[in-house]
Image (cartoon, rainbow, N blue to C red):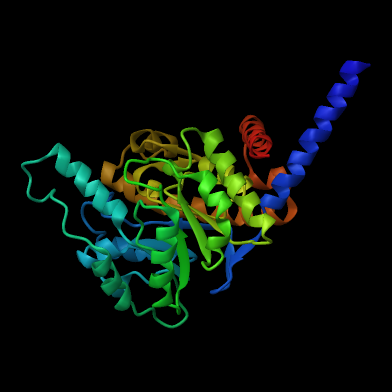
Length: 348
């Protein structure tokens, strides 16, 4: 009898966690520009593409990039892509480009003798000048990301507030970073305790790698942030930077995240919601007779179609919370659900 009672209590506990997850995972919007979430944002970056897309290839990809895309102001500064060519989707995100800068620094460490690998000068003032020159065409919306730097949270917020105040026609995404240069993780306690300071921004951004050192810890921390926002009656979207693999997207989505961007779609091929090395992808798709370059181009196009389909399924799920809408196999669906439930228990 006692074991049966315990089982019933545990079942009720799981049900409560499911209810909490359903509240965390729901439709939201970027209020200032009225853009619906969940939103998948394929990113372009010189850190992945050493050479720009050929014009005809870029045109083909642009046709598939209808909802959202992200470009780096650093790449705009270096003319890796022309400003007039970035307006390929309904909403365009522009971030500072510090990701690209860090990539070049890492390459420079490996190849000290190479002049080409040396990082070019890049400052907040240079970033601001690029933003000042942006001219979105009619019917295109833009989201700006602050110049992200590791420093105390209050300083990050103050700097971002001043920056966005000079660009009020754009939506604002505050990308929160660790509190000092020696830190590799966000101070989740500080962010949760001071979440009211984020009210002035349209989106709260975090990078996947700085959320935690395991998938469970990252999901738990997203839920903690979502719970803190909900406690203030805020439905502000959470943007996870650097996450664009289908399985990772869904895990974070179930735990309260809303916007996902990254360059993984340029590095791997997606097949049945899993990212594969391009050579293996050629086998899975039956394209092993094509050149590696040809397979890569096809993978980019297929990936964009798959990501759009995933986003639409997520939007339906956010409204109905029916597991079959995500179209995963039974085993992986169970693992994702168990992960989300455990994260919900850990997040309290």
